Length: 208
Image 1: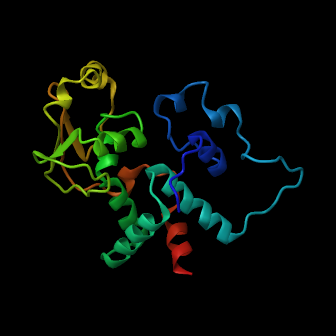
Image 2: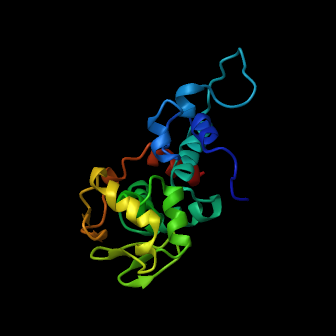
């Protein structure tokens, strides 16, 4: 499946919920879901009932869109969640939250996960003093997230240092707002994900 390059707001409208794909724009009057709450495509006068399979598919797509993951990679991550002890749906949410691009977003270094993914791919982020450009890298408890020295001199970094005080960081992460160094305090729980999708429906979708 190719990378989606269309309007992000179209994905939110298709899902029927705000997936926060555009950062601050999602809170503004320009939000596509607020302006055009109906699904994209030709309007229909008939109300169609969504089947159970359709509901499961929609929840799976919500998760994929939210974290910006392609189908093959998402399915591989689900299989990994299945192999772990415990509830597969909960394991999946924890794995998604542990992705490096998500951690960069949660620390407030980016306004959206797509922007965080770009920061990682362009080599601006280090994990435990080692530069990595892999957005799917899974962080562990005790890992530190810092900036590459050259990136810390950029205009983006300087602007971020001025606005980082207003960002809210989840309890499983800590952030030194003076020098912009983040740390993974603990492994996130399913509740920390604040997900907009039903993990149980995703498990049912892949179980068929």
